[in-house]
Image (cartoon, rainbow, N blue to C red; front, side, top):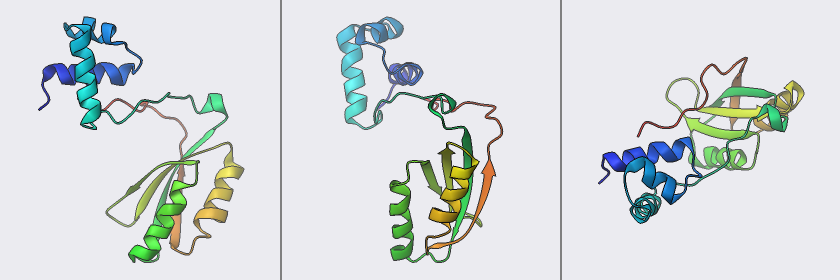
Length: 151
């Protein structure tokens, strides 16, 4: 069962995953060993699923971000699972969601340039037999950065 201290610890780690047990302890009013045990418990319970560096896409040459809605030809599990495997191996597709409504999936994509996005859409997505159509939206500006989850 999570308590207020767990929630505070989660918020702190979402802001800075490199906080030491001593730094967490100071923020939470705990001993370093208590803070470390709480973090380990949350990791063991898969509340905290991992840690990673947050990169600036432009700084690493990914100047185009797009959201692409994909409509599949069929919902047959054999067909959709084949398309899902394709998604796993396309590094430009950083996340994918299944949806209700007209689109079956929503893909978040980062590419070096428009030509790369065009190639991904036409040569990879539309070329896959499971895809009926796609609708792409190019991000002009991200007005709110990806935020931590509410804890």
